[in-house]
Amino acid sequence: MGYVTSGYATRPHKRARKVVRKVYYEHGKSSVDVNNDNTRIAGDGRPLRAKIRRLQLEDLDQDVLERIFLFSGRNSALAMVNQRFYHLLRPTPYLIHSYLRQNYICDINAAIMRECERSYQSRYVLAEAALDNSMFLQFLDENPHILDVVDEVAPLEDPEQVQESRSQAFIDNTLQDLSSPCCEVEVHLVSGKPLKDFPASIYRRPAIFFHNDIESGPVIYNQLLLRLHAFYAIQHSSWATEMVMQWFFEESPDRFHPLNINHLFCAINLILHISVENNRGFMDVHPLVQLIDHMYISLTSHLSQLLLCERLEDPVLISDRKGKIIVKFINKFYRNNLRALSEDALWRTLHRTKNPKLLETITKLGGKPSFNIMK
Image (cartoon, one colour):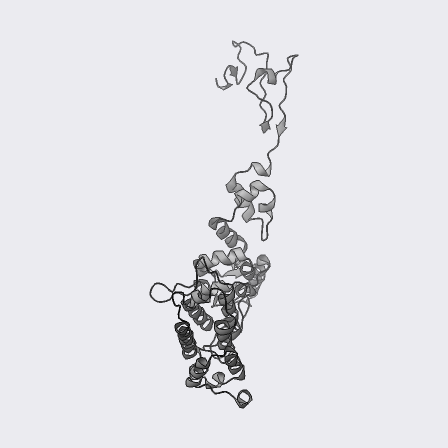
């Protein structure tokens, strides 16, 4: 004979002494101490029922809450419900990765597997909206290998609708190649690169172009941008370079993770590599004009640190250092481009520097001022 509690049999027994007082078992959380007989039995001998508090969402374990959060869809506000949820649903790398896989990476051929498993071929698409989120973008920048499983990046708003439409097209025999993209993108006739610019969120974070490893051996460029280059290409390399150059001279940090002129050259190399045209230089003179402006006219407080001139005190040596940087920039990005070196905008900026040695340097490299500048 089993006992549910000490001294109380699970079934009546003819030889057992009859129990006058019954034991009640209540589910849920009780606000009454059930171990105290005075709280369980009223004064007249009737049992006193404990007050039951139903289980709430806050009583669930952290792993259960994380699963609910993952399946709650995009832009879920579950983490902002209360302080406990905010603490438990912190954006850890594991949670961010799981949230991306669940809500932003989709197999658009998943519905076809139910119809014809033999012909099934997966095609994973990353929703473009994931790149608009700064937290997701930073996570992908730190973990670019996640994109190795992605076959396409497209504006995927309703994944289930896309899956059903592709499944129906496959049944109707209008979709024969399961590796066909979700959204067709035109390519450049010469370079073969996509005629689709990077999302605006990339340009809002100019520092991402400087996340290159230039210290050890050959330069290792930003792996996220190189992977995204399969789906995007910079359409205006000159404008992107000016934007990056302005951030470098005016907004780059001067204490934590300081940058220098070598980082700028590598960032420009990356921009030209992932641009739509396979050019190793610039056709217009605006990037050179902006570089001269920042180095000679619009001086910043930490310019010596950026140009690696911190230990130089002689103004002549500092001027020579600037001149060598200009020569290197021209030889690298304006080689044999005499037309750009003769632009009026460049020579107006050179006259504003009031540096005759710089004008002489540009002249030796092939630049010639026009009649409008000389008069």
